[in-house]
Length: 459
Image (cartoon, rainbow, N blue to C red; front, side, top):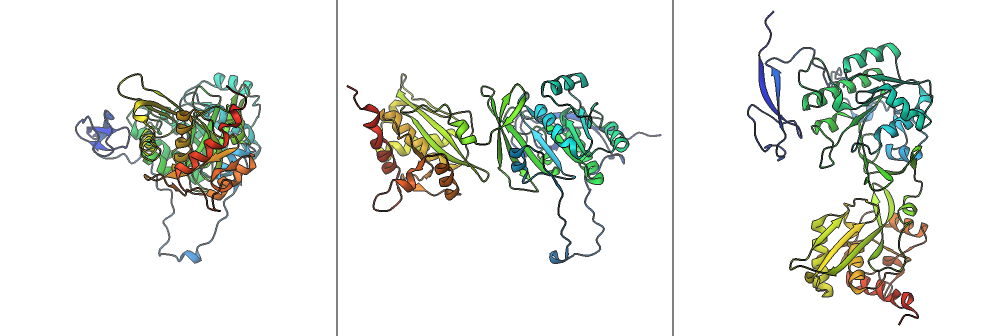
């Protein structure tokens, strides 16, 4: 028997781009130092798993009005916050990717989820990173005791398929895809080929047998899901755990969901007994807010379709060196530079001589433009040494001329502000029955309204 010749191929671990020669920078995604050498046969193996699970047997196109509507069966997990993120429950036969940094709580969450889902059928928990004894110790700490939960320690996905055919589980958990492998692929576990084909193999298995599958994925140093982007395209849903290790809360965010809206979040608190869902994240994040301190502003943001109140903190101090510092945690550094420039131009603050530090309390990361106004008011408050009125909450995008622009879901934000006993500066503080339109006006009203109140009786 003549074996096919092997050839050396360099594959980008970020995007999956292939090249016959090594290169320092990937021409496809622009990443540096991501090419890894792999050996591939000249002719693809006939055993190679296929990602084509869609039925293409239809002989002719069908009008969309004639297609039979199928109501997807959903499993309620019993974890209300997670059910909201999934869009009302986990869809039967779906494949979900759960990612996050090491130690952030992925395995803990999946064990707790397994305990809730075991009422619907058998669960096969495949661990390629830990021994069954380690899983058992964690389950004992979390008080997870269910006879429908089965632990199987292997990284071989062909063995997983055999076990699935024998026990016929309703759910499969793979922890993690970076340590799983297919023997028909010669590259090492964790390579682009193994991760891509392993995910396709599991997806094919799930779709053909109607098994709901969760796959754990690692993240790289930039916080993105490790492996090629095609990994995210194969699965039905992508959920990512976020959170600073210095805090005891975790945010589960929906990055992709074929059965619901994306961007939805759930907030959990890490405790000894596992992850505990937070019903009112706004109240949780504001629990340690200082009252009457300059530089602290309440901001109402949107994550998916969910409003949440957060504290924006700013500190302005005279620069000790020639070049002033600009530091931001939780918001884009470039956006902070623009806001500082607007404050210098519109309010005349000489911030070129001051260090400016901005932080979103709790370690939350904000990417939407509605945080502009709270950041500007917080900086002005710290510079003036005047606190902002404690009942005020705000949001709004800033234009380069200092105008306050509208943002998405303003009515939803207003309701969240009122529900938590705050009032919006846009609607409640008015001049001539018009909403506040300029940053300068918002800063003046916010600081003037309180300066006397917190300094009564002071020298």
